[in-house]
Length: 225
Image (cartoon, rainbow, N blue to C red; front, side):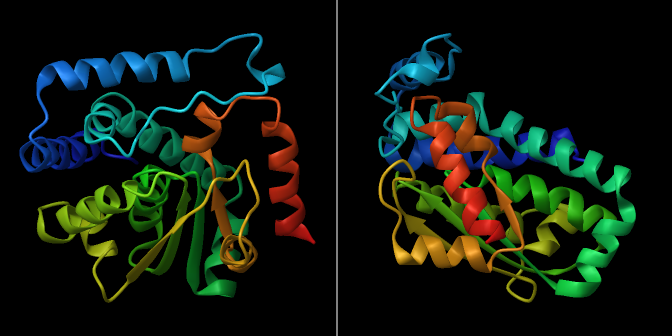
């Protein structure tokens, strides 16, 4: 359902564009990859730690490293989970589309929008072209430019129905800068409460510390109450 070649080509194209734009050399990218390995490395003590170790994605080399090593996999992971959920409960998702009409995605800690792209890859294949509004929330503000580059590449490249699904006729997006482990702004609260689909795969994959579980409980409360 999620065409691996299409997703890989999308991220590779934007990666190469970032390398040219920001004049990043291979040594810097290797350093970024090594730093990310430390961030994503599982550890038994992570959930008891007071400190969350986060890569500096405001640095172009780290963003490029993420696009190379993790973005395609996080996108595919989201797509596979959404596909599985739809196949297990098709009537639920059909009713969801009929009821809401517009899919309102809130991607928490979404980085370059990999969660959003994963959802779109599956929804567009199964349900066709839908009205979609996506809000990405992340503490690293420079990811906004990367997400914009990915959307532009989808719009003007050759990506089939996935590319069509993000044209201005069907897709709108916004980006909110906020640290989800700190105090959430009214803008973030509104984005969560107005959404009918919330993702946080990219965020939870890296945000393992003492406050993570309580933060997730807060999100669930905002969604259901």
